[in-house]
Image (tube, rainbow, N blue to C red; front, side, top):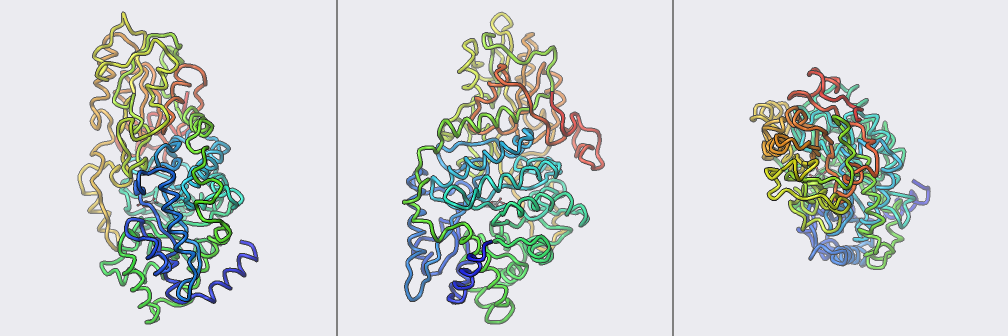
Length: 601
Ligand code: GLC
């Protein structure tokens, strides 16, 4: 932070009333606040939750919305100081909420590329596609080091190995923020801290590890991110040994702010303080006093303002804490040059025609190619040749929604091709280069015929999910146990399924593979999923097997490699399990993995 920023922060802070200070500490969801309230309550930030889009979700709709919020925040009068609003969004694999965006592979696939330079380029493209909508702040990158693939957010993690995450974190922050000029957006590294270590893979659960393990495994990636100048950090819903991070003064203030020297803004997660106490009044003080600076609130932001004002007048929240929070928020806005920026409608990248462009999509296509991991290739079946007679089958073969996964247009993702505008499904990518390729009539492969087909490509795996709705859990014993350990409440969503064995989770996949293999047509299986799963039966029934993760909109990248234009270079960034339970190579108790971390043919 430059000295100039420091001076400007102090000058502004001195002019601010308590109401204006507390208003800056609020980030309200766009559906519960309009521009006039942003001005009247001096609100510091507005956000879009997953899938919360203005109008028809076009670039112009986004820029118009941001322009209105910005203009309101800048209308100075006796009551209101001109402090520009900052708008936040989950652009976690491209500007994924918005129609026509370039959708990149989710982090688990990027972990398999082992290519930090590529990560920085992806971040740079993502920043421009976020700026095209007039938005300044993305809640990315996730720095979780996921340790149990039952967790619904495994795909948001680059790797089970902190070293891989560390090699990416600073680079991605630099790619997003650039030189903090017109081409960058504010990064928000998340979730502080230990989200990936949640016991049993329960989203928002309890991370029961020693402080040494918390530091070496889960805090480590934040050091290069802070070194790269990340301007914000988001606190985790998780608890550490029973104590919620949102109320954890030691983790937020003593470690993150003091020991690691983080000078930017610490923001809560979505209503994250609500789970600290049954009383929102009490939760407000707990969250503020823990050291959180800005509060992401989906509805009750007016109560938050009233409660915090009451705490300050009672002295249960000190004025110094308020000033620290507002100082950090102003620092983030000033360091980012927000005060110098013109209104969103007049900014260089707003509605820019590079959005969703071929050039941007080529970066995503390269990422898809480099993310593919070849797990089996009997008789060197792969690469295929373009003039082979290829039968394509499987529920994920022609489904851009499924290949993008969660956090795409909608919070829980979409199904079919219509909602992901632009890009190619895996089938569309194959058809574009292999004239002899045909789609199985009903996708089931029953029409396989060795006289007509030389080889089959069967695209299997998971359907989209996000957060707790992606958890895999047999029954609720683990949840009850985790809940009993946590001081506060645990929000549990309907899990994705009750098993980590693919043939039980999605039996249709093995059926399709065997329907074709039994006709003596060799099968190349491509698995589209947010995580490794137990796939012994599918592997044994396939001649070749490729982990494709969640490739995003540019399915063409899969054909580029299957058909030999590019080699397989991906390496597992997660151990692949042999049986239910966490694979041994994670360093935890369970058995040997089917394929270890780092594997790839
Ligand atoms: C969600 C996620 C967080 C996201 C935020 C806003 O619950 O935990 O990663 O940035 O809310 O959508």
